[in-house]
Image 1 (cartoon, rainbow over the protein chains, first blue to last red):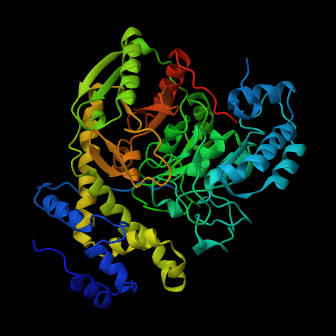
Image 2 (cartoon, one colour; image 1 turned 60 degrees about the horizontal axis):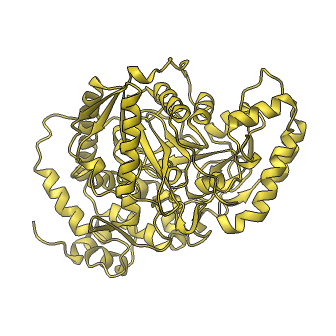
Length: 67
Length: 451
């Protein structure tokens, strides 16, 4: 998996019907400077590991009505 | 000797109210006076409803048949709707959001005769375990004001910790009731997922949110649970020498403060001496559990907050916006996969509980961090303070098992240490009964904070 690029997230923002996040906020996800989000790339790397784990036919957790 | 009135447990207050030794109005006034003195320090309350509370108290007639919560002053995190009052979520975004109805749990408390006194501070929209809030201030720990009360139900913990109410309601998505309760020397409880209604409570993550309680004891927790949940079974008689208690290996005892581990060791020795069976249990792999939780949390939070973003997006704090932006950039299959892992965790945990009654862990791996600390370091490894605070609690939001944290020691730095007990699905009554028995049997008494 290639490293995340800012252009990818700008594309999601502009072409996927997303809220209009500031460029700086998108940049922060890709190249953290402020320490608010420190690990989006690490999260994606872990998600790639999870993708490779075979969960068989286990369904998504069903939610219970809480009303 | 009775604890000072402001720190008395509900059970004691109920007895004094019934006997006529104490009036409901005097009790509310006691807390009102302390709030006037200590709220600026504790930052526990965002808003107050004391005039109505005092009027309600003056009108109450208490009889022996009444629910023990009658005339008991309580507070709730400012995510809960109370009709006619602002539900701010601890944010400028909802500064004008006046609730049209009471949250289900507020209705239940009021029907039992409990007296609502105000809304508690929190980490904005429950996003974070440190309880830091730029708008309403960061709640300091009642045992050391240079340290965090913890969050996200920070004000609820502070309200009890500073002796400003007798009970509080919070929400727990990764430990946001249990962890601050643990750091402040309180009993913090989250039920089996779905057993207490979340209707009328601003959501953070529907898949993980639980409404929970904070109180001074497990015994008080039972009184609250009886009111807040449906179909509460009479507590079975619990005997320590018949309990089988699972001790999870690895994750839950790793990278923890040694004094916390020593306190849990002493608790385990108490169980052994009392005849309980302690059984090592192998838990599901926790390696990716925080990733799984985050991958569910942030898209769900974004999905709720999208209703406000276009018009009021600039009113959110920078850190919450960053989290929501992250939620925007995850793929649908990643979210679904995370929910499949949650189902896998649930199934694995149900198997773990096949051979045990309860699970015992430390509540937190660290004592309350210093206010402003970005990271904490244990065993030479650093991690964000918020992650550390909820490291041992968040897994059970995914599995949905009921869990309670209880004080079990004092750290040499003068801060409470707590244990966490986890019960079987829908075993809330047994869990609380066991915790009540432990707190009445275990030779440990938490000193009161100096207020």
